[in-house]
Amino acid sequence: MFLEERRNKILAYLTKHERASVDYLATAFAVSKETIRSDLNEFVRLNLVQRCYGGAIIVRRSLQSELIAPRSKNFEVLLKRLEKQTLHQTSKQKGNKMNGKVCILGSFNVDIVAKVARFPKGCESIIAQGSALGPGGKEANQAMAASRGGSQVYFVTKVGTDQFSQFAYDHLSSSDIHAFKLYQSDTEPTGNSIIYVSQQNGENMIAIYPGANQTITDDEVAAIAPELTTSDVLLVQLENNFSVTLNVIKLAHALGKKVILNPAPYPSEILPYLDYLDVITPNETEASLLSGIDIQDFDSTKEAALKIARMGAKRVIITMGSRGVLLYDGHQSQHIPALGVDTTGAGDAFNGAFAAALANGQSMVQAATYASAFASLAVEREGASNMREHQQVIARLSQR
Ligand code: RIB
View 1 (cartoon, protein in one colour):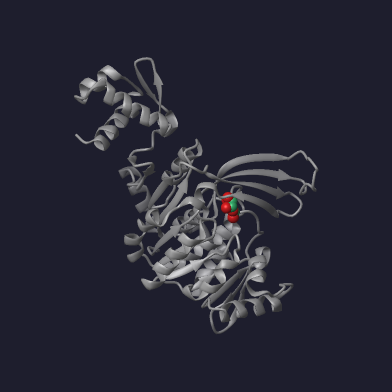
View 2 (tube, rainbow, N blue to C red):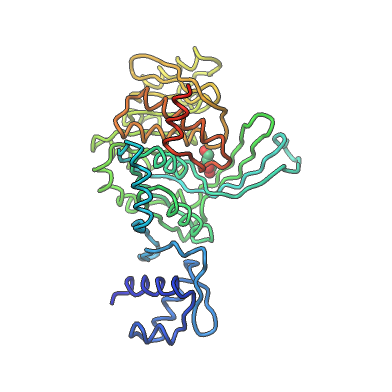
């Protein structure tokens, strides 16, 4: 029996019986006690079990980790859903009538959120009114939205070797995301974001430390290539290292896939490459930086969209928070009003749902309208990754 099969079987045994002794496992798998100790030590490293006298005990929150394949210094997980989860997903998707495929390369962060009455000033300490720690990262949020929007999502991301890697794994494996690869960096921690949400107006301020997200390599991302060939859309943002993100954009473009870029956080390095994109989705600040036009009102927003299109991006969607989105389809501009208020993660909800709808063959306007309704529902819940179901979006659209 190969190492990986033995380790999966040991994990399955521990999952069922909770604990096992080294003696028992060595006899059951016909290997030395040394071999079993090394298996258990690897599980300890991955935070799957705790050692106890003469054996090991499963860590309860790891029970859903079914397939873990250590490879060199990374661990790589291609999630194959448990049968029960697959059925659950299939029955959910019946009503969706959406089945496009979206490939997503991007960030996973741990979000530490403080609800504050107002933003603190420099050198000021204030007491927060509430606090939460949860999964985030623009692209992980967008992957959640795209899968809730009914598309088949394939997601690649990278975390550290800290305790948040298991947190990321649990979050992704319990989501509707169809499949993911999760790499681990030995040198950088899992990305994190410190977020203030003002209770005055719902606005947020975010400081992101991308950490492991910026250590993803071309080789790791090459794993996306076979999935990309059968995808309709590639969706990316810019929290990962720029060169690798750019290579994926070029690959998708060469394969004739629709490429959507959410240019956040904004780097000027993207400017020479806008013609690889089918749709770019900046917010007003990013659109001002891209175009050099100071956005003040609808007219200047339109002007910025036109300029960005002329710079190479074929279609432009500028997200404007509670004022909706401005869409430029290469010929004309159209305003799509918002259906709710803007707050943390609204842009991610919009991008993910837009990619799903586009992958499903909807037009730009239909996809942007769907995504606006999706985002309006997402912001009614706390947490940047907390997305709603497709049927709820349809209900919201019909109220309009
Ligand atoms: O758009 C919100 C997201 O931006 C947060 O989840 C945070 O992690 C940052 O990536």
